[in-house]
Structures are given as C-alpha cells and as structure tokens.
Length: 226
Image 1 (tube, one colour):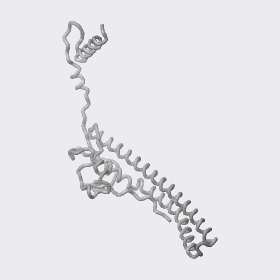
Image 2: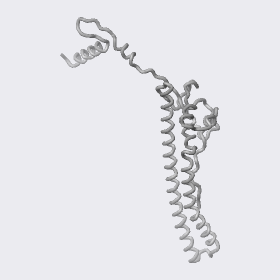
Image 3: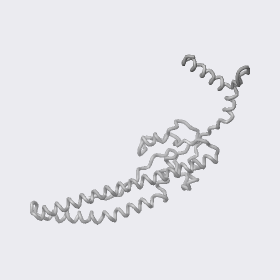
C-alpha cells in the first residue's frame, strides 16, 4: 500500500473512531460529543478593577510607611552633604578667581558634588526597586483576594478590567486608562471590585472607586539635589 493511501486509511479510521464506530458489522454511534458536553466545565466570567485596587493598596498603611521611612533615611544621609556643598559654594564665591586656593576649592567641590550625584542615583534606584516590589506584592494580594471572592460567588474566570470609559483627557496617563479596560463591554452585575475591596479591608469603599476613576500620579522619588 502506498504511503498516501495508508495516510488516507488511517485518517478515515481515526474519523470513524472519533464518531463512536465500535468496529466492523456494527453501526457507528456518535456518543463522544454528548460525553464531552457532559464534562465540559461551565464558564462564568467576572471582572475586577485590579489596577484601582492595586493603586489603593500601594497608598495604604500596608506599604506607605516603608516608603516614608526610606525617604526620611535618604534625607538624613543627603542633607548634610548638600549643606556642605552650599557652604563650599559660598566660600568659593568669596575667593579670587584663578588663584591656587580658588582652583583647589573648585576641584574639591566638583569631586564632592559628583560623589553626591552618584549616591543619589543609587538611592533613587533603591527607591524604584522598593516601589516595584510593593506594587508586585500588592497586585499579588489583589489577585488572590479576587480569586477567593470569585470562587465563593461561583465565577470561574476573572478578567482585570475597569468599568466605564471615564474622561481620558483628565487622566494622569490616558494610555494606562485605556489598558485598564480590555473589555469594551461588560455588565456591572459581574463586577466584583467592591467585594474584593471589602475582602482586602480597604476603607472607605466608596472612595476606592469613584464613578469614573483616573490613575493617580506616581509617588515621588526621594527629593534632594545640589
């Protein structure tokens, strides 16, 4: 038997078996579709505004104190160096330009200013890492709470999507607002955001989700400079 014919035969046999054919001399009974329908899970979809809840968690007492402590510690380290550089600038301005004393003072000032810049860059990187870790942890807690609430309510799928279109022109970042709405249309009855907020103990609930929420501005990095 040629290869092409063998393939056709095997394909026909597979098709017959999939239709419930028990073998030669017996009629084929298409029982598989009914069996598949019997075990097919029922999909029930819910939505939750994961972005709004994560933002609220990020600004809550669970995470904000750590950022404030980091900022205070950074200021304690940087402020003395900034004061020293300010004093050096005052002394340099009183010197005769071009004098050996002036040149030496300028060189020292530049070295200290460069060292402070490098330290501030390191601090800003550490602060960014802290914020990223907090956002990731907050999002994980939001999704876990959404899973628990959805399971109790009988939902099998939860989509992270924000209800309503809102005023994109007033949003801090319109792109984020658009990405927060992957579902163009969904009934309000399937939105679990308020229930998830209660699960996470985020009071007051009504302030978590205004009618048309917009993304808040990003938390500022530790301030400071020359």
